[in-house]
Image 1 (spheres, rainbow, N blue to C red):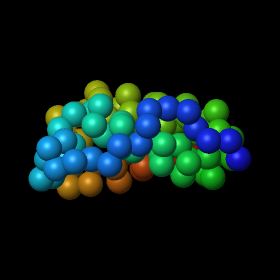
Image 2 (cartoon, rainbow, N blue to C red):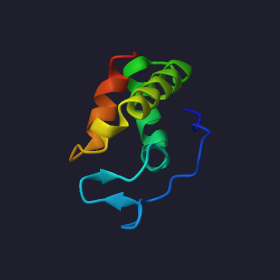
Image 3 (tube, rainbow, N blue to C red):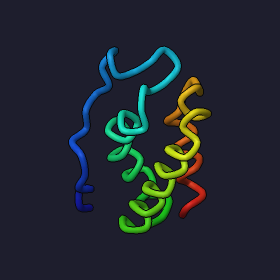
Length: 86
């Protein structure tokens, strides 16, 4: 299976992660995009469809950032939102 191209995975540092979440949608994207695409490629059965579902989930996270950023595990919300796209 081909690797997803995207930003290099960066482990969130304590400076980029708030107590209850990520400090920006970009921080969430950088930390979660590659792993989310890998998970979705199993659910979707297609890498392009997985990438599309991930992209849509990140758009939804950005639009709802005031709510998503307050969640204890915003990455769980992101996975749930993305799984509906497959």
